[in-house]
Length: 109
Image (cartoon, rainbow, N blue to C red; front, side, top):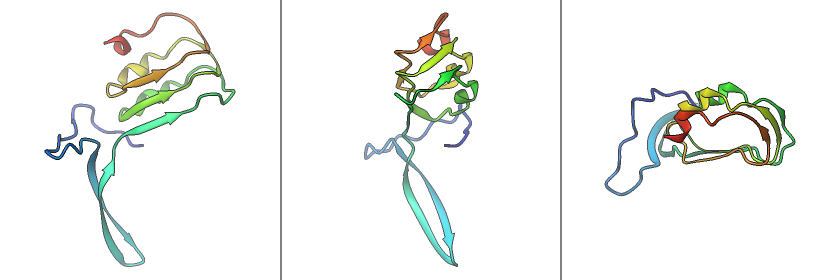
């Protein structure tokens, strides 16, 4: 997972490969290989892990995240405003925790 400029959107391919957008050249033991069509769809599933405490605000830095599941843990407190930075998130599951307060507006839009 890397931090990327949120104003830059991945290109839409004519072949429908929207999630395979990046490439990189890897050199190992003097052998150079180009890795193309890197999957840019990211999922973090930390459900049922018995986590307790507050949701770390640093999760809002993972702006390429598409799916985040923190359900069925012992998380408490408010949902960090930084999660509003996850503009590409398609699924966010915070159910079955002890969270309080309002859902940040950025997540509702």
